[in-house]
Amino acid sequence: MKKRVFLGIACVLFLFFFGCKKEGVSLVSTGLRDQPTDRKGAFKWINAVNRGQVVTIMQEQKNGDWMKVQLADGVTEGWIRKVYIHKGKKQVIVFTEPAKLYDQPDLDSRIIAALPAGTKALMLRTKDQWYDVSINSGQNGWVKKGTFKKGSDVTSRLRHEVALGEIGRSFVESSSMLPEGGGYTYTVMNLFDKNPGTTWQVGNAGIGDWVEVTFPEPVSIKVSMINGFVKVDPRFAQYGANGDLYKLNNRVKSMRVEYLDSGGIQRASIINFADTMRDYQDAGVYKNVLRIRFIIESVYKGLKWNDTALGELKIDRQ
Image (cartoon, rainbow, N blue to C red; front, side):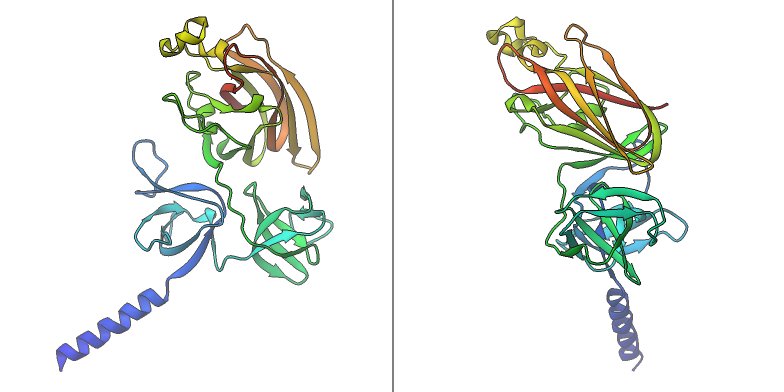
């Protein structure tokens, strides 16, 4: 009898535990860690998590910032920040007309962003005729009913989390990148590794390609960049310049900088690069920025390839 009672209680607890698991949706593209910490060297990356990916919430820290989740494969588990997960079902919307993203469900509140038609977002909650949504830049805000319809997906695979010194956790996204080749990777994350011998690269000259950084809050910043692929690789000496990848690839000549300030105003400027300097070059100072995009406008032609390379992007609090 005691054994039956024990088994009955165990079954109830099992059903209760698994029945209480909650579904969540990732609001950003980031990664799972084996430990709930940001401390360098204290954790390992387990798996990538894309924006819009559905997860199962396994555990939450009561007095901490982390939660443990399980991916859809039913096996892979790891830690992720609570603020990156929406607890609830995945609801995607797409804006059918231009809309404004407000700080509060009030037309008199601050405008965070102007959303063009076609923008996709994750719906988080509702309040009267207002909807709390998460847009692709990782920002939350309120939109008025009647400007959107049900959508299909919001995944962004080229968006990454990056730590920017005193600024804190930010997000970087690129329009495209070259596939791995020649023993090198060309991901946008190479711009933040303090190594000009690794690059973000785009093909077909890269005119119109861009890198965009979104900050956790409005911040005044000073930007500097190392242009080109600052590396000599003897394996490519057969193509000229003794294998100088700086000369063999395109370099950026000018960029258009578009940025959204804390008042929701879109601003723009042009920056130009000298082609004789293989170190950091000044790329401007920008005030109260929420999001900033660097768009390639023109290039210096490479001796061999039409791929355009950018070595480093340094952003400091001003």
